[in-house]
Image (cartoon, rainbow, N blue to C red; front, side):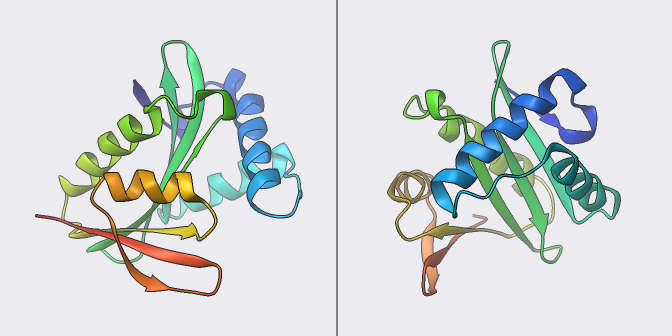
Length: 149
């Protein structure tokens, strides 16, 4: 498995990434689709300002999803993950998140958080398995946290 930073991504993969994003948006939000140009502009702006890093998950020769890390402060990082439907249930999200968590905790960050919808049981189980705990409950989401040992 390989994590590829967005700004190092081959242009050939962009359409596939948009499909993954739209698939997840359709399942998790309200069937709004994101245009390629809007998503690329959003990520490039966040990357340029240093607010966020986006990694695409490559397994063998396929882009299977993506993850992001956004620093709220030097000590706290928020992460998220999206996996293409046909690759779910194969422990690939676990493998990718494990790589990202290790990478984040190699720096000064002492806490990683993730906001997960209450009805997204698969993601909740994944983050729980990785050692995250619910630290805050909101109306439709929970904030999950993992502290550096």
